[in-house]
Image (tube, rainbow, N blue to C red; front, side, top):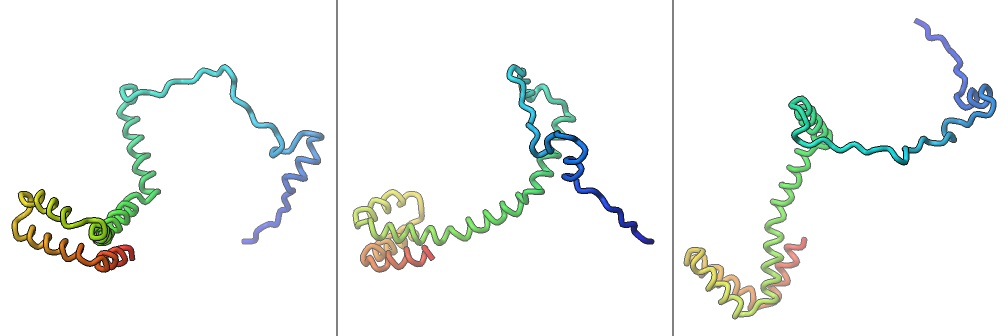
Length: 146
């Protein structure tokens, strides 16, 4: 099967030759809205039918699939979960830099009834060691920041 070679005239040449003074489509003025045109109110939820709600749900589902919302949500959850240890390291490092022994006893007094006794003693020992040397706090901030 052979294709016929047809020569098509260019659109610009056609507009310039045959119209005798009409502007090209790119140069034509755009229509403007009426000044006194009444604006219709948006329909309320009670004005919509079941068919309208089904159409809205279909359109929303289609648009969410085009935007890959499930992939974005999974990525956000994954990175948020992975950032928790880094945030805890930075928080512990900043606490070690700014807190003193009085802050540790105040926190332990408040946590005494909330967490078990062994966990309280373990946390108190860790926080006291953390506040004794500032180099430890700086190291925690550096590791958490990376």
